Image (tube, rainbow, N blue to C red; front, top):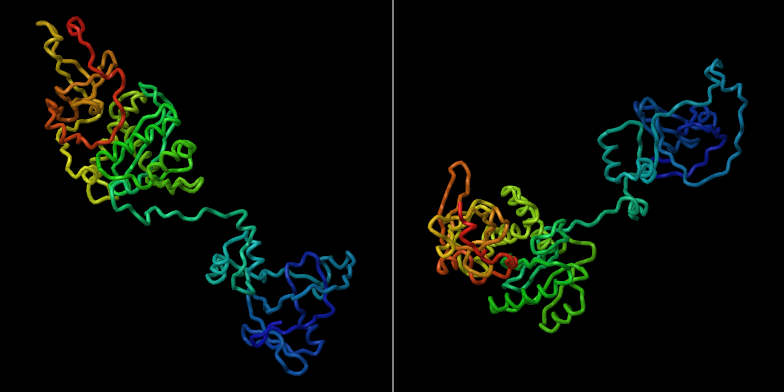
Length: 443
């Protein structure tokens, strides 16, 4: 029993046990017969023993006086079974043995289980704000020990911060890499995967196509060799996931030989390699949008990704102060010769391939820039073959039907595609200039 701010151990005798009773009831008449004194003062109820000492306190709740009591230990009791006739509803009121108590008092641990392992703070909030009725929590202090059942049923992963705690200070200090694929459709050259490499300090990105994941080692060596040659710096750390393509023995031997630290992410935690994961997702999103805008089949994802990585390097990023390309190359890029991916490109046919009545133009589709020479990368509409040419008249469509003639020259191309651009998708084997005969150009 609780009184005067402390708990008093007491034993109640002559207790009646009712199987379906929802709570414990105290009989005032029985307490008085035992020599106690019961006082009601407003909403307070106090019980005094024969020595006039306060032994129990309570208060009025839901029209019932609820006393502060709890069972400290299991005590054996003799249970009497009543005859069925005592349950007759026509009996006088003094024969009624049970009533329904609308308030339940229980420790917070029991309420935690009753409410389906609800958070302890939520339980205390329910009581303090009066969100429900008939609920009394005896002790409102959450237990210090963990609820193992809650962990088994509701444990989640820890929050992974999206902002990196550290960034590389120098170019090639940290290089993030990730493989994406297989893509549902082969490219025109038979590729189904691609691997990206992104610099942590400048966020300058490179991309290589793969037919199989086993080709990652070859692309990695090519990237490191070219990046170190262009920047005259050394790759210090390579960050990747635990994919088997990165854990192969020959790759580890190569990294050890070149004194490159291999930082491997935690298993089943792609968020730790978020820089490369985000890059791949962004490139695929941009490629899907460009293919839809150009109304091209999905088999042209190779060309779309090639142009997407080129546009990414010259676009601003929230991770760096300027464009990735400027941080990597040290020069600003001239975008005056950019065109809409998939727009109409009228290629000038060389005079040696024409006669006096032949057409001097071929209608093609713009797919980006050549990686091997100063030229545009095109696709002939009728033959669906790839062509590379430097003298083009573009028709980008739109409300103003813009048409512009662009001739790529070595001195202007260097401003648009700097020599420091890492190797990207190589030109397809069929991308060499199409041998154009006079008959094929006749109208």
